[in-house]
Length: 99
Image 1: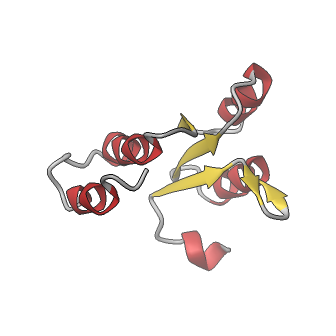
Image 2: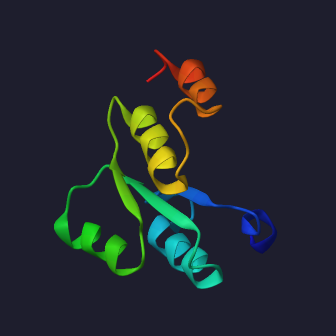
């Protein structure tokens, strides 16, 4: 996994992953490089779980729902200090109407 995240600036992690939970991945990423921005994605609104994400260094949390792609785009713009008019607009156009 180290080779995958060496040049990574932002990671989106779903809490429920096959064979491992996202909290464990969050911990690993932050131990490897605290500067990588991590945004957790979850369908749960349990305060204890959300508190654990923050406690372990999550930079943002996105609730699963119909507009998740817009939230992901907004998180990228916010955490990477990128203009909304950047090539990310291509991502928005690609996913428009798919969520």
